[in-house]
Length: 541
Image 1 (cartoon, rainbow, N blue to C red):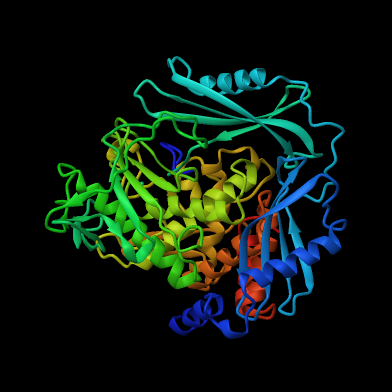
Image 2 (cartoon, one colour):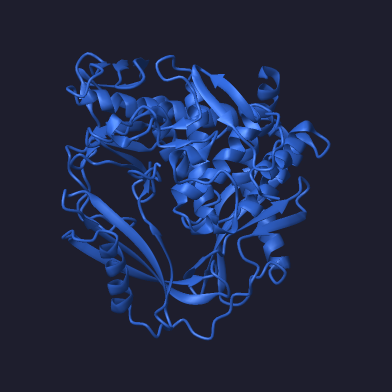
C-alpha cells in the first residue's frame, strides 16, 4: 500500500544507548522468550477476557510481539467475531517483566455482539457499489478488467459495531496501469460507511539514477551474479518488463507481473541513466538495503516483518506509471518509471524508505488508511523514509525534510511531493490540526504528523540542512527546541509498535508518543516535554 500517489505525494552516545535499549539482544539472558511471553499473555487473556471486551464468539490471533530489554512485553492481537475479521478489533496487551497484566491499548472499547452475521444486502450489490465508486474516480475512462470482491466483516471503526461488506475493487486504466479502491458498506442498509485507496503509494556495485555509485551485496549464480542480497534476508530486485498484475489487489493474482531476479555478468550494475534498465534496479535494491540497515541499527528490527526475511522489488512496472507501492499480499515493492513530465522513475531513496515503512506499519499498528489514522499511516512512512535518507548519508542524495525531491520533474510545478517543515507549501496539506483534518486525503492530512516530527527533531524557525533551506512555523506562536532525529525515530517507532492501534487519531498519537517518551527517557526529561511542546505547536492538545 504505497501511499505516495501522483500529485498527492504526495548525540552519538544517546543514540547508542537508545539502540541498545531497544535491540532484541540487549539483556537477552534475563528476558523471556517469545513463547514464554505468549504463554503469559494467553493466561492473562483467559483471566481478563471480559474486561478486555472478549465476549462469546470472539477469537484472537497474534500479529506482533515486542519484548523490552527489561523483560516487559507487548503483544499485539487481531480479533474475529464468529469467524469474521473485526475492523478495529485489534489491541495491544502490556505485560510486566514478571508476567503480570499492566494494561492494554484497544482500537475500540465497544462491546462486539451482533444479533446475526447474515447480511441483508447481497454480495453482488456490494460489489456493484464498489465498482461504481472506482468508476467515479476515473470519469470518462473505460476501465478494463474491473473486478470487485466483497468480504463480510464486522466494522468496529465507525461507531457501534455492525456487519459490513469490505469490497476491494480494482481495474486497469486506459494506459493499462492498476487502479483500486476499497469500499466499506453497511451489510444491512446498503449505506456506504467509508472508502479508501487500496494501493499504498508514494519510488558488487551499481550506478544508480539518484544516488551515484553504491555498494551492493549480490549472489553468485554460475558464471554471473544475481541481484539478491543474502545478508539482508534474501531481498532481491526483478524487472517487471512494463507489465502489470492481473488480479484483484490484496487477493491471489491470476497473473503477477514478473519479478525474476536480475542477473549481471561482471557484478557492476547499471550506467546511471534510464537507457540501462538495471540503473533503476540499482536504486531500488540500494533503497531496500539502506531501509533494512536503518531499522536494524536504530530499532533492532530485522526486516519489514521483524522476522529476518527479505522482501523483493519490481522495477519498470506498467506504462509510464506515475506511482510506487507496497503490497502486503506479495510482500514486495513495485516502482513505475514515471511519465517523464511530472515524475521520473519512482525509485529514489526516500520513496523506497517510505514504501517499506508501510510494510512495517501493516505488521504493527496497521493504521487504517482513511481519516486521521490514514494521515498517521502516511506520516509514519514519510518520517521513516526521511530518517532512512539521513541514515544513508549519501552525498549524492543528502538527507532533508522534503519528500520525493529527486523524482519530480519541472512539469510537477514544485520541487518536492511534500514538505515536512511546512506542509502547506504543497498547497494542500495543513500545518495545524483542525476538526476538518479527518476529511482530507491521507496524503494531505499527514501534514500534521509530518510537521510534528520535524519540530520534534529540528525545532522551529529557519535553518539550512545539507544545503536545503527549511523554515518551520508553529501554530501557537511558540518556539520549539528539537531533540534530534535519532530520538524522534526512537519515540515514533516505540509509539507505533507498542501503543498505536488501527484506529489511532492525532490525539491518540500524542498520547502514544508521550507514553513512548516516558518509557525511554522518563516524564521529567527534556524529551518528554519536547513531545508535548511539538504537539501543541501543531494544534494537538
